[in-house]
Image 1 (cartoon, rainbow, N blue to C red):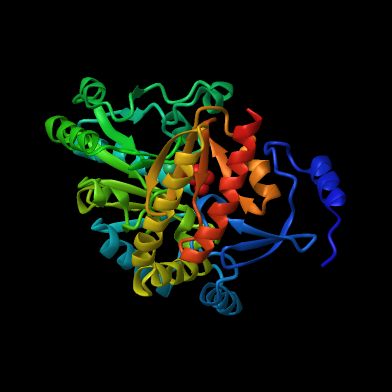
Image 2 (tube, helix red, strand yellow):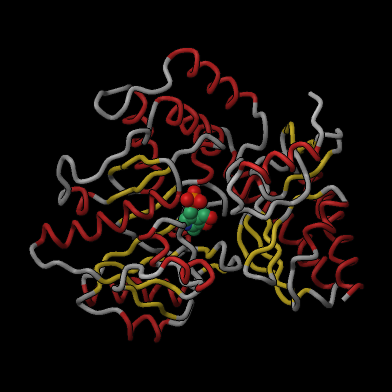
Length: 401
Ligand SMILES: Cc1ncc(COP(=O)(O)O)c(C=O)c1O
């Protein structure tokens, strides 16, 4: 395949709506944790397409399953049964402890479904509650409902007015949460590990405050596990590590390993308040997406992937802390499993090109944070080599500041 980078950029800038500021790289191929650009240069992918390619690139079992399903039947719509949705929902129920799944196509749709199901719950109960309580570092997606519970003004302001019934509280501040939640609150929404907002796990004290506020007021808890779920932290879901019991869980990103699929998981209590026609999706949970998701879950949870994340995650953390100790520009390391943020005491933008130059893909989030979401299959040796290169990139940026 011969690709001229200038042609790619020229055609995009002429025809594609300019909502993304892309890095100047064109990837054409991947294998495991490695990506290759149009010139054949190799990169360690420490981002997985923002937490999506959990099995890495061109995974043999996943590519085989997708190809076989595509040659058999891709889509029939939700007007008909097919054999895979129930199987995937059962798998997710066993992993999460939540009874039922609704399938959609993205993280924001999963969150949107959770918000609607929470409203529907209170409506069916005959005591409607409209209000949501969310966190001030949250990110839940770009559709109007998800945006309404996303705090960053940069994302919100051009699209206001959004839902007026949202209160934001300080992340990991139990008193702030307790003051905001009342018997008007339909649901508290929180990512168990805040992702876009800078990779911040909720503290056990804050998790306990969520449980207490829900018990006191009847408010539901929606866990947004779009980024932190499905083995990323070494647990099926991070709410489990925190001892939380959500009524609804939003899932996306890694679920299809790159094939778009999301899911809203609901407890039986919520499921009992929904009726036919309350929500829907044309594509949601089609055969291709379900086949991909079943393969991903099989690889992560049946073939030792989650234990691998715990083991390599510990190596990853040790190596990151060693790197942090040698660079004054690093303020803090935060995360769990294979979900890490390196918080700098300066804007982290310059680390991204410095890492690319050294053959490592990372991104910046929350201005000062270098975000690391490697494929869950990364080995100890690959971790060592990739983080060695990142160490050099941080050194170069730190020295230049
Ligand atoms: C926690 C969380 N929720 C929701 C979303 C939105 O997902 P999507 O971009 O698939 O709509 C994201 C995306 O980054 C996310 O990190």
